[in-house]
Length: 99
Image (tube, rainbow, N blue to C red):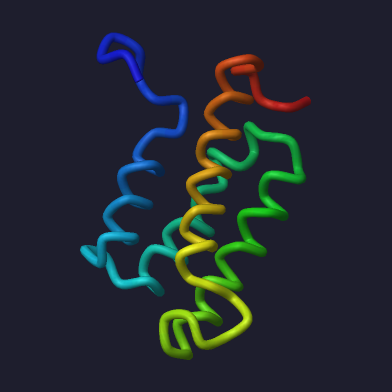
């Protein structure tokens, strides 16, 4: 992002990076991310559905060893980053809230 142009996702990308690095407990990040309704309301409904699904799977994966369950934490973190990238693109193209 350009320093003169604020990120349309606010602090979401930094919170994601902090959680992925283990600087924020996973449950705390997931609770925080689910509470970002001002962000998800500015996106098409499918974005919220995908986000909640990814967060649910990420929390489930934490109950098991890193890659021992059907949800790879690495893949889920990558998918959340992809969600951030797509949400940012959508908000840059269509910055107004959905009507």
